[in-house]
Every structure is written in C-alpha cells, then in structure tokens.
Image 1 (cartoon, rainbow, N blue to C red):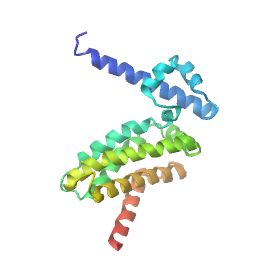
Image 2: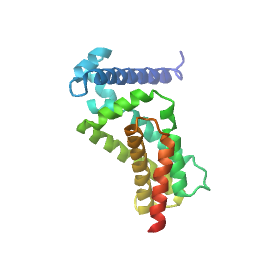
Image 3: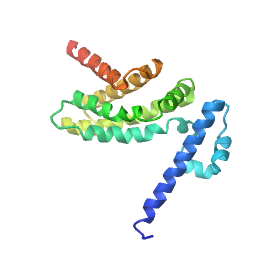
Image 4: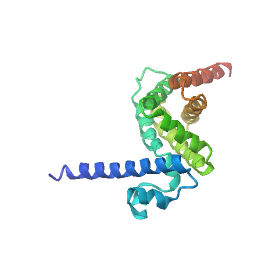
Length: 202
C-alpha cells in the first residue's frame, strides 16, 4: 500500500464504522423505541467505545438524523450546479428535486419509520430543525453568488433559501403523512408553485 492510498483506506474504514453505528442504532430504535434504547446498548451492538462514538457523533439524537449530513452537502452542490440561465426560484426548485431524488431509490419504509420516530421525539425533532437551518445556510451561499449578492448582508438569498428548505421539509412531512404513496417530487413542485403564486400577489 502506498502513502497515497492509506488516507483513502482510513476514510473508508471510518465511513463503514459510522454507517454500522447508525444502522445498529436505527434497528434498536425501531424495535425497542428511541427513549427505551440507551446509548450503551447501541455501542454494545457494534462493539465500539463511547470515545469512538463521540468521534463520529455529538449526541444520541444525531443517530436518527445522520442522513441529513449528506443532504446538506448534496443540496449545496445541487444549487451550485444549476445552469446560470435559471431564475433563482427555478434553480432552487430543481436543486431540491435533485437533492430528494435519492429517497425514491432507498429503503422507503425504513426511512418513513425513522421520520415517524423523529416526529414523536421532541429532542430529535429539535436537532433536525438545527440541521435544516444548516441546510438553508449551505444553500444560501451558492444562491447569493448566482444572484450577485452578499449572502450575509442581502436579504433575498436568505429568504429564498429558507423558503426552499421549508418547502423541502413540508414536502417530506406531507409525503410521509400520506403513506409515502404520492410522488415526493410532485409535492416539491406543488410547494414551489404555492410560493410563486404568493410572490405574484405581493
């Protein structure tokens, strides 16, 4: 193994360990309940120490919303990758569609069960709200660049980014409430159409 290969191998091992902790935790939470499952039980299931756990996560709550860490980076890159010709609201809509497209490809029943667990666990719901705020911040910067505005000083990119993430959250919640039978991306479109109508009335 060369020096250049070593960091890649280490990163893959870290990602595997992180994924194993998440999967074991979700299995236990869905089987026994979030509040009823202790962190020590999760750690025993994957045979890792508390020290190792806290290298990857800040809290037990993070285990149920770990999927959002990747979502934040995907959303940022999705906005950055939209064609310059797209108006800001259209670019945001298409970026959110791109970001959420992978949910159709994964284990939908498991994702729905996890989100239902989040919805009835106040501490986790609050933590998820923080992640959504981070997602709005991540989207705001490439959006401001597209609009030739300052992401810290100008209001428009802040408002539009926050609205886009709110539409994403509401779309996921509506999708889950309807048994994940509707088209999630159509719900996103519906949310952006509602926003555009209100913008025209203003």
